[in-house]
Amino acid sequence: MGQIDIPEKGKLWTSNFKLVFTVNIFSSLAFYLLMIVISGFAIQQYRVSESQAGVAASIFIIGALVARLVFGKRVLKIGCKKTLYIGLILSLVMCLFYLIASGIYPLILVRFLHGFGFGICSTALGTIVALIVPPRRSGEGIGYYGLSQSISTAIGPFLGILFARGGHYHALFLVAAFVMVLGLICTKYLNLPDFRIEDEKSSSFSIRQYIEPGVIPISFISLIAFCCYSTVVSFLSLYAAETGLTAAAKYFFIVYAVAILVSRPITGKLYDRIGENLIMYPTFLLFVLGLLAYALTVSGGWLLFAAALIGYGIGTIQSTTQTISVKLTPRHRLGIANSTFFVLTDIGMGLGPIVAGLLIPELGFRGMYLVFTCLGFMGLFAYHFLHGKKVMKKSFG
Image (cartoon, rainbow, N blue to C red; front, side, top):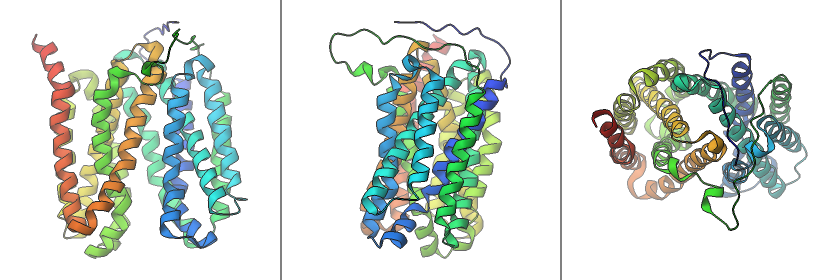
């Protein structure tokens, strides 16, 4: 088993960090460009049912989840940069294959493989960031790194809807392919130390080959938060139509993204200074208040206020829990730890809409969102008992 020794340097915005930040924008952008429009494309292009179109949209997450499990244990053995190349090239090829998919089942296969490529990229990029950020500035570094995904979240859906309105799906696929090419060009200039290690020797199967047990509790907190958040993403347009707030809903993700862009650098620096508990407790409370405001919204202004609270909450929770998982993990297992963290986050993203879909016929949209508001509040207590209490004991013990 190899060890990785990275000298602790104070500089954060190195050329490698800037390149990884940029590559993550491109990799995520290709995902967010297509996320909202792919179900509409499937229905228009192949005349399939909403359920089949939904499978084409959601199978992406399954592909990403499988990739994280497969490559989490291998990213440091293969090499971070080489793994990133694999993910980017696969994603590029799949973006081009959208152009020639001849039916719903080929499209579903392309979506799965695109998700697989995205999962490889995000696992490699998350591992690289965890290794190159100075340990004493990990909260700030991962917070800034998370901004790259926030930028993609703001730009991608907007451009996707813009292209889809004109029926320019093929042009959209070409744009997605182009940004992957840009990602490959940036990757070429990454100048990383040799992070490669050998696999941990084991004569029999062990769950530790694929999962880092030490980060499961904090990753479970992320799962709860993203389970709640996913219901907002999945049903925003339908909820807005029912409440007569369609006009305001167009600006929801803009306000959401601005809240993340403003909060992440600040909370990242605060994490390094004051620790996770003083960040997580108030943030989780604000996130729950955002979910409550969203569930009870009666005006466009109230909806956008909820967007700001939810954006601040989910952005800070995601970056803080990821930073905690990095700090809990030996450096030679960072690939597996990152994989574990994102697998649980993906499960939360996938589970939320399924449960919400079962609740809506019984409770309506507002009732469903109130249930998830309660779940978010339970997440606050889960954080306390799974992690926060331990930090308190260390601080006062």
